[in-house]
Length: 112
Length: 114
Image 1 (cartoon, rainbow over the protein chains, first blue to last red):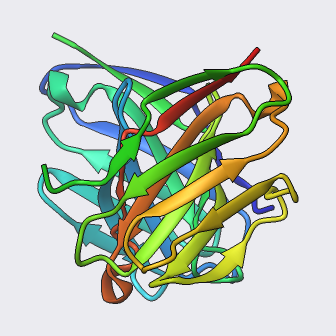
Image 2: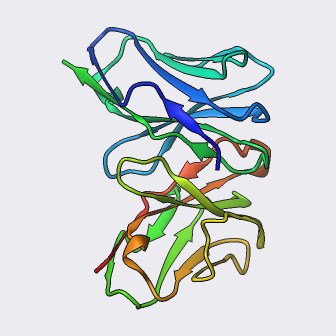
Image 3: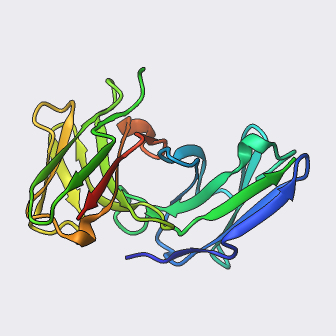
């Protein structure tokens, strides 16, 4: 399978600070990358995606950066809130294009 | 509730028994995916359907696993002769073909094989 990994398994931030979650991917053929959030006991929830022809995409309080040169993806969360506490997964679509390979995940804890 | 629905939420079965899970996708979504997730890991792709056609299966999907989507709406995932290694969360997701990156996941079925 593909290799999608995260640099840090856990991240703790103070409420109101910005969070940055990093991800490394291995397949240069991937043309879609997605970030998902998973809260305890729930299925993953789509946050934002980015195509390989872009290097930055912004959503509501979130920004995804893509660096294809070093095969690196990051998710920035602005003004982190307690409700952002969850496990965050990056995923890439690999060679086939129609499925996603997920990384192990980073657990984000927001300290009030 | 108009989200993806999975049934049952939890299933405990004895090794060697067969189990079947059901997924009801969001009604207008023509793509349906099955994933498996073990504790501390990201979801692993198993298979996906576009309408009633099963278009792709993972190498993880052994002969004991079979999935169907007979009318292009709900889907079932059956595991025959369950093994302890099958214990996991089985997740279903659906999406529109034109917005396939934005898949909506159900809450999953937690399978425990004893």
